[in-house]
Length: 381
Ligand SMILES: *Cc1c(COP(=O)(O)O)cnc(C)c1O
Image 1: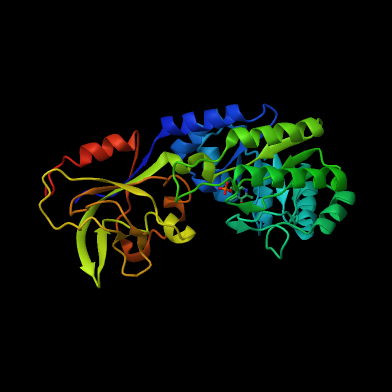
Image 2 (image 1 turned 90 degrees about the vertical axis):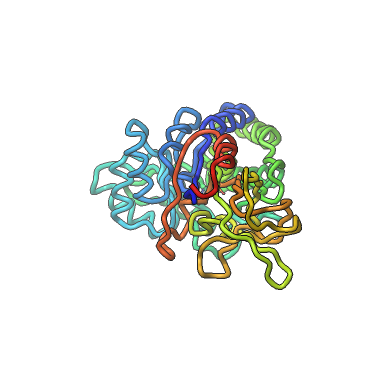
């Protein structure tokens, strides 16, 4: 049995980000939200292609400093920043600290005065925007993230000593298609300029990745046209976006091998090595993870009848499901399953110590080549 493998296709990642960068107006600053995938190879590949990195913990700051010592973080965000976090962000010379509450702003001001370093901040505002159909909406309803618009206006009007308020940060929803993301950006920009006089606006990430329709991609060209129009209307504003998932999701694959197939009460189960402790994305998002099957040469073991299957892993819990009721043709023991779209919120969000199974391996390159080669290996070496 071969250990499951994550393969990051760094060439595909670079090509993808280059093409979406080309679809955006020059003036839009593109930050990468490190939390989507903080693998060193991913950060190194993105470094020349993005304007900066959005970090949301001291761990991410440290990772960035280790992997790209010459790059300061463009942003430090996240709820529940401790004094130690804020001090570290000041010491690291983070370009903008995204502040989540009036109390956090006061603490940051006091620390900045003590450190004799002004803190340049964006206020994270929880604005009411219309985003029907988005998968995760955080704006305009009670939220642990950001501050109410009235509090932000007050903070901007009377900032504490040590703090320079430069503008607004909003990350209001995820799963936004391009028209929705454009509408959200327009709403955020309008509010920030008229109510706060902002000169910098970060409209967040959340651009949709459609796991049910892998070939349907976020319309970066359409989104770019919308942003170009907004920049024309606000020529003095610096506009930022900070996507994570939509940059890296397509450039990671998780490959594993079928251990067993069986029928239970009329349902075919395919049991693979690994599972959601390696790839938690489908469990976290509630979708079937898309996959293709590489038939194993010389396989003689049991196989399904070609009907729908439920693919499960090695964990002793019924929640360890990678894909439910999916039609993928005949699947047999030894076949290699290729789970694409595993480049974001995948290994790094997985409960890797549950049952103390071995971790997957990690490689870079073209995952299809590896799958093709793997499917020719002897089944029981
Ligand atoms: C998670 C997060 C992002 C990235 O979101 P994606 O859905 O991965 O694009 C951006 N900004 C903030 C504040 C976040 O919390």
